[in-house]
Amino acid sequence: MDEEVTDLAARIEKTVRSNIVQSIRAFNPSDLQAVAQLWGQHFLYAELEEATTKQRILEEIGNQFLLSTYFGRNLDALYECLTGTISKAGAQPGFIVVLEHIPISVKFDKEMREQLLDIFRDAAEFWAERKVPFRCFYSFF
Image (cartoon, rainbow, N blue to C red):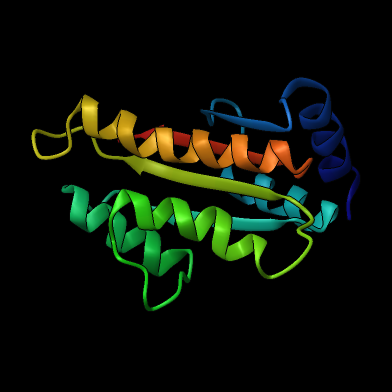
C-alpha cells in the first residue's frame, strides 16, 4: 500500500469512531475502499443516484452489496442481512460501508432517509457490541 493510503488510514483511525454512521465529507469512496483493503475489512458500496423510491433504493443496496437472493427488500431484511446473516458466517474483520448519492426527492423524503440511515446506525451498534468496526459513510444527491 502506498503512503497516502497508510496516512489516510491513520487519520480515519484517529478521527472517525469505529462504529458510526456519518457524512462522507472529505473522504472519497475509492480511498475508503483502499483503507478497507489495508485493514482487511469488508467494503460495501452502493451508488444510489438512479434510485428514487424506497423500493429501488433497497433493490440497489441488495444488488450492489451482493446480498442473498432471499433478501426481502425491506428495512428489517436489510438489518438482518447486515447483522445476523453475516455474524453467522463467523468472526468478522470489520466493515467500511459507503452509501453514495442517497436521493432527496418527493418519493424518498427526509423521514425515509432517516429510516434508512437508522438501519445502518443499528447495524453499527450491533457490531460495536461484538467489538467489530462498522463505519458507514453517506452522501445525499
